[in-house]
Length: 141
Image (cartoon, rainbow, N blue to C red; front, side, top):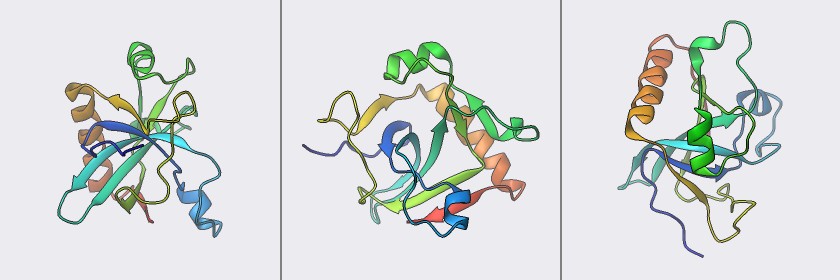
């Protein structure tokens, strides 16, 4: 099985290490999650991903979360629950890394597919604003 080409906008399955887990001293996330590749540098294989979660934003986090439209979730093969892109934190790693995971529904794949460019630009814009406000936590793995 080969890895997909890591391009911005690709949704991968990844063992995401949440900031709260890192703060607890963990080096591996408690579970695997879909994540969106935001940045990939081909010369260094440096990759930055944002997590996708079922947890709606807490009070005060509404400006750091974007709900993924149900139709897009269906197209990507994500489950029927609400899914949120969280831009208040990122993981940074060297592609492909040891934390990339095969899809539960298809063990021959690591990716769900691409998100539309317009939605990707919305994520990038919100991440940029959150970074500008100094509200992005990063876990280097």
